[in-house]
Length: 183
Image (cartoon, rainbow, N blue to C red; front, top):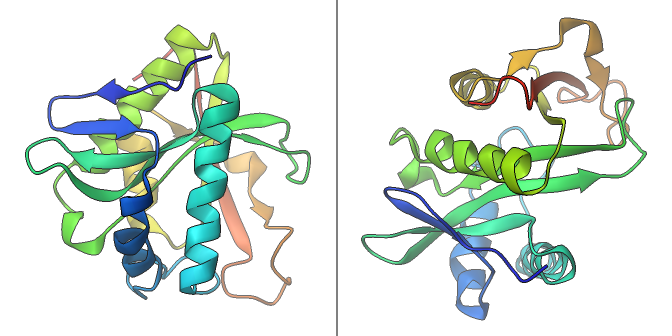
């Protein structure tokens, strides 16, 4: 599949560019953005993540797209879909996820872009279900999940396998949405 670009009213979900790396490094080093991830990322870790995101887009045509504000053409984060490997208790699955620069929070960008990502997953990829998960205490991301029509699967809470059981972010919640009830 040719790499996909999705346009919404205010945003563009697109393949990654080399010039996205400096602002991506900045948001991955921001403790406010990374509060519900185990560490902030170094510049090399952030660049490697951007490269992985782009490699999946090249391979499949979709993935965690770079997120751009249409009015300014500024890179503001990522939003998209990711095929999760078998490491999680509910895998294999496709998740929707997002990460945005702190100064872009509270503007509805995550909900707008994630809704477009869900539509793509259901309409173009023919997915039956899309999931999202986060640390229990990440109330902002959980609110986005609910705004885009996802519902918590309260029976499917889990300990993230990459984190030790005593880590404060170990416990995660799982949200689901089916093709029968897209946002």
